[in-house]
Length: 257
Length: 165
Image (tube, rainbow over all chains, first blue to last red; front, side, top):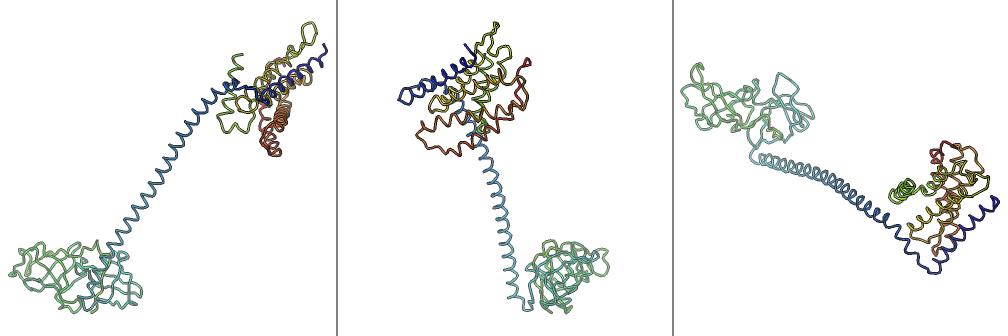
């Protein structure tokens, strides 16, 4: 048989078989039996889908976990900010209460930085001469004396702290009423010029006397810690722990002269 | 034989499981590969006595029809369109390799695979159009077939015939 005829025969056989197959199905004849062929692939499909679902579930859980962690961090930060605002609010309220008890109340200021001068122990306030602040004005908090205004600029001022050796204030013992002078001595202060016959007990409260004409009388300064009589010369050497630590000053009140 | 069964299973497994393989028509590639690897110059339809047996064409057509049958069974639609299209493709590839092309080159492989994929898709569409109750978007279907043919064609460069061709 010629080559072309044989090929035509193969093609015809294919077309007839295919057409017959489709005709049987089109007339409703069942070839459902052959659908069994797809069962291994259906099984594979279900396994793959299950694996993909599990992977997607794990992936989604991981992403959700990350999102929740971020949200939790943001919430914790917000809570911390809220707490900080609450504490600040309380401090400011306390400072405002000073306005009622301190007749020479001038302004409230915020500590914005440590002083730039390395030889002096100072802090910078965010208010200056434009708020009525002047040199040598007393700076206090609800706890007690902080220092005095050292330099003033229109928008800021510098406070010489109580603990600075260049600082001094006329003081007296609250109980005994003995006078002296408080000077800075690093992290503490020293109450000078108290005669040796005066009995000073550790824990005695030291306040400003107002005799220097700078600080109002009655400002709490600190507590007597150590009293040294021997070898101190004509006067006792009393170490005083200030009520207001220099490290925790945030908002202050400036008291006018 | 076992190798071809395994390859067939693997082809359908890839095509049904991997979403990326959806844009490929791996079954027609398998038919092409079968014809490319099994039909040699010596087996291309001529007996030792110089008579034409048509065995190569028959094998190509039969393998194509079998693959088409599997494909139709898996698709869940009418069994037949892919049988016809793949069978014809197998027959045509066998004729091409036995009579028309005496020397395989990567470019021929690429062109043949492109043309065969296109022909296969068009035959299936032509048969299913009048038989399916669903309305098929012809332009969209042709576009999809063309994309498959283009994506399939580079495989024609990779797949090589046996050394004796």
